[in-house]
Length: 327
Image (cartoon, rainbow, N blue to C red):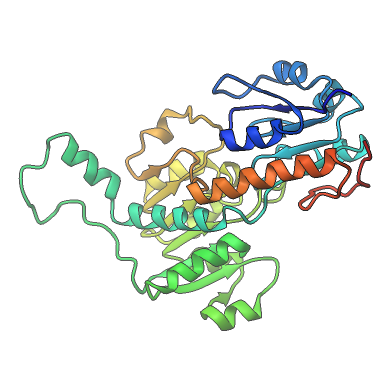
């Protein structure tokens, strides 16, 4: 009897691949790039399972190309905005992700962006490396203080809460906005629930942790940026499209806010020269969730979900609800 077929859309750590190969027939995209839609449709044809990344759009067209034997698409990621949930559910394909594995790493990276942007670390490092540093000077790279300032958190999920806990070490006042207040968290941290307008007006540093939904696209735009302090810093390690980048450039140029730290952008890779070259923006290349420990847990969870479904067991982290398919 032939083994179930698994397709992995992009090279991921070998341990994950070997774990799957122990029981299944596995093919991996050999190129270090995202597949085109047509390539993806061709490669998933006849597969029983697919390991996907956020760069892979898994919609009805791709699912139909795979065929009716497809049982699961497992995202090697926490997010799943690349999934068409309704299309998969109609076709009885289970979709899974790896929640919780990268919360610490993302929160740490968020706070790293905050500190590095406030203290102008990247600018200063480049200045030294370019051989421009000729000695101490009193007006060099004057940054912003963080201690005692107000941190605004938009979206108090696991990552937002983790960022808030880190902020306590800097004696920051914590404001947050979410769909509803969290009394237990307020008691733990002293955080204060506020509406969006108050969050914008009072935050010295605003970090974004909202999911990407139709209603959160351009959550921060021209109107919102105009409400912020001229000394404020915006940090986004959530999803690129929650910030209107044209509005951000205008706000920075006009002095409506001071700076931004971005791990994500609306279109990746970044192709907007005005954004890329802006002196008041610090970038990292969508690496907020990268950590050795987090990756190890993520690959284990992904492989386990594939194994469970192909062996007729229930998934642990489904993002759509379906009966467990039997082989």
